[in-house]
Amino acid sequence: MAVLIDADNVSCSYAKPMLEELARYGTPTVKRIYGDWTSPNLSNWKAILLENAIIPVQQYSYTTGKNSTDSALIIDAMDLLYTGNLDCFCIVSSDSDFTRLATRLREAGKKVIGIGEEKTPKPFIAACDKFIFLEILKPNVCKPVKIEKAPAKSTGRGQSQSKLSPEPLPQELINLLVTSVEDIAGEDGWTFLGDLGNLILKKNPSFDPRNYGYTKLTPLILATDMFDIDVRETSNKTVKHMYVRLKQSEG
Figure 1 (tube, rainbow, N blue to C red):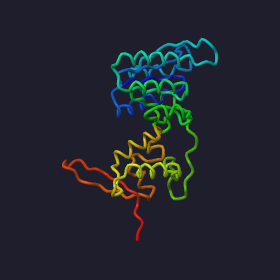
Figure 2 (figure 1 turned 30 degrees about the horizontal axis):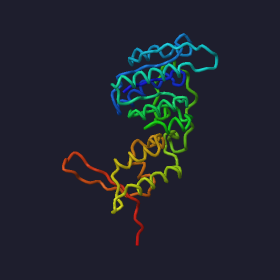
Figure 3 (figure 1 turned 120 degrees about the horizontal axis):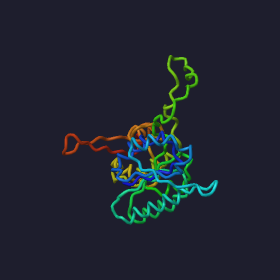
Figure 4 (figure 1 turned 30 degrees about the vertical axis):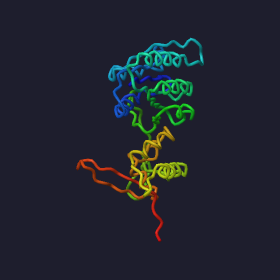
């Protein structure tokens, strides 16, 4: 895997969580970050680069208001593509300028993972095989910690209101789950959970249960209260397969 980071669009606090997340999908053998390292805005990255073996690529800002790191990242990505030694590219940026790059890499048969903020334009998200929002990754502190504000007010039950409490699921998500189950369900209505997850990602590359406050797909599906879950034994006693179907109407 090649991990190419646009330093102008990503906080250094996400470096370690990003690499830990990407370890689930492959081995980052190329790790490069692009920016104007003479700029004081990127000074906090120095220690992070050393700790995570990320190679900085210098790109001067020739013109005010123009992001010159984009072209450097794109050129390097194409050079790496033609070496033929990589199976996957990860582009870390919230910039829509990388949409065509992601499309070109996929045309060449490479898997493309995007990482950026929720404000990332939809064309770039759609151009990736999978897109991960930075907001679901827990950032590390990479600069002096500021004094925190007063703690959250009590809810009156002796506990603070948790920001991680799942919010009501949007109808758009419900429709995505329902139609996906219906698309690949067998004649008995059951769908293998692994196949379901793959289909949902193809329809919506930015899908991730953590976007909705759930760590896995199964608890997210159960939270909708619209599906039945069936856990089936396999020939391997340590492995079980999970199936899902729309709840059957009684009577």
